[in-house]
Image 1 (cartoon, rainbow, N blue to C red):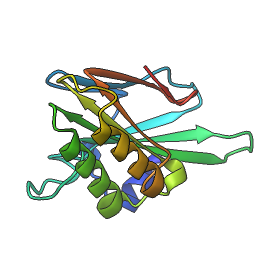
Image 2 (cartoon, one colour; image 1 turned 90 degrees about the vertical axis):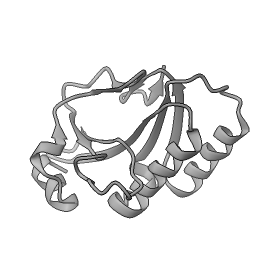
Image 3 (tube, rainbow, N blue to C red; image 1 turned 90 degrees about the horizontal axis):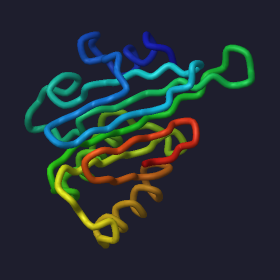
Image 4 (tube, rainbow, N blue to C red; image 1 turned 45 degrees about the vertical axis):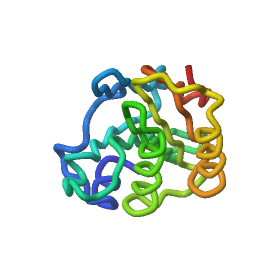
Length: 160
């Protein structure tokens, strides 16, 4: 899906479509690296831009990645839903779920979620494990969580 198609399908204003692969809020940071030279990545600022209603539950950012395939001119899209949060993992998960189900309605095979918390949460927390399982069953390929900085390699689909 090219930029125009993405904007038309989801009614995205130009000012909400950012040319970046790194987003930060307070002490939380999400970054996509490395970016393949054949990829096109769009960052949609959702909170206070694409969705301005303060009462609407939504995540902070959605990235869309166009992946060039071996077939000439064919593009495959991936959506990355990102919430940068203090320590309220449960609220962050709700924000991602609501954004997917009510505003973007992506297919499971093209959807990955990311929660970056600024306060340390134990990785073996049962709440996090349950959320990851629910996400895989209902919303997308995987839900990743990391404290402070999350780097995502879109080529290998790994987190560090």
